[in-house]
Image 1 (cartoon, rainbow, N blue to C red):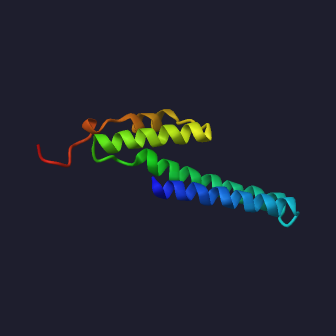
Image 2 (cartoon, rainbow, N blue to C red; image 1 turned 120 degrees about the horizontal axis):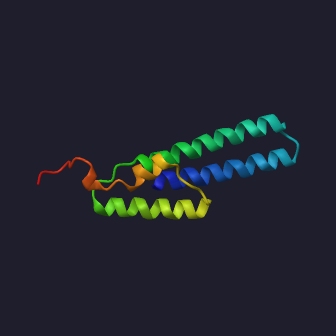
Length: 100
């Protein structure tokens, strides 16, 4: 999660820098659009890494849900049905890695 937060900050900084370049007419609209597309893809990869992360217990599951809820609220984002199912899958629904 810390890596995702750092990546989001880097993405925000990159978008701000590209906005300044575009405003100063230092880049074409096509180059600007291509760069923003790259930023969106990077953000999506980071988000999917969090969605697909397999918590190692109830505590990590709760942290993952809290983080994703805060992320979705902050970005006003949504998840597709598959992402929602993965996110809500409880640790008990997966094979246990510890002996009982």
